[in-house]
Image (cartoon, rainbow, N blue to C red; front, side, top):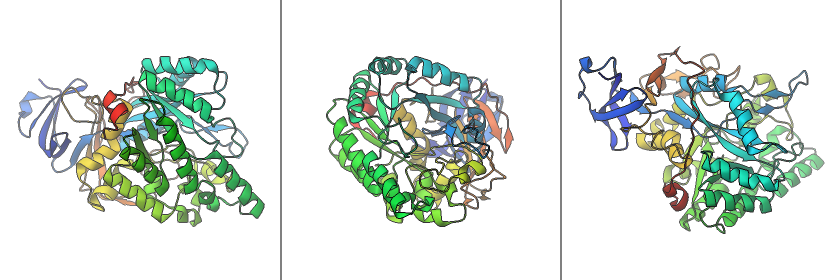
Length: 476
């Protein structure tokens, strides 16, 4: 007898969207068949999703749990919300996999960094998870060998900053000589670099300029973290990668038309490069900084213009932007609002829970994207690029039974009271045209009609290997 059968008329599979039965035994999908194939008596439970959308669980490839945030009013340095909080909210919102970061600080080896990060995650995450290795500052000679060993062990993505982001934050940027050395190791070992691309000279020059001019309010952030900075950095990083055979790139949080165009041109030359944007950039612009409590809309790099936003939507539609992530940094409203200057505004945001509903509404309902395209941008492409496919990101035989049912008959106005992350939401007042009625993690129902059934020991670490197709041919 099967453990579970999900039946629906809008099931999103690689073969298309249609009426299917998904048969599940244990943690795995064992059959995808025409709707009605399995009789009720053949399974312990049959869930009829009707006209709701049945899709793979969402994958957010860019979150920051237990991440340093500015000190609170009492001066005590703090951390963003831990995995237990963010993963719970993720499951409520239909996301079943998170990819965070293991930050290699100066003097700490990669193995020790991973060990310490495990202590913050193991037994404390409700959904499945993985890490990008984050290297920063002046790199020691030993770290290159450690990166190679980590890639071979199932940690194939390496995060690099090309800027310190803010004047008060030194030691984050990696210089281009060291980036070149990392690229050679990553290409040789079959990994991928995931980049924060801004030109440090331009960013820091603009901080200095705006300080001189007395324009220090956070509403000027788009002038500091500007489109030119993204253009220069993306093109320099791409040119470096093109000189390292087998090098693959993934640009995180693409925010400007210039970044979209740099990726587009590189892909036209056959360079393996992928683009990620955030729902923050797709739905807000620099004009939103002028709204009351405008800091709540901010993340780094800054929000940009309506023209930049339009370019992001074009890129998402035509295959230059491949994923929509959150850059989740879940903190309190007090922390988010305490910075009021261009150099002290808190980055990141709480957005993992409403991401699927917001993107369904904006993509499918308002812009006419096919359901398959929406699923690609919120789940499947991340699985393919990051080395999780076909275990994750697809409803197929032998894949993990990570399944989200989106109820499209339910219209919801978002509010902080209905969400499960923190005491504010940048999405307050947005109407969404669907909401998850059920989230299933590896065959187990973990959220059902608003009732949470998860356990913090449910989450498993996902060791990854990026396919040659994704690394060597810009397959998407």
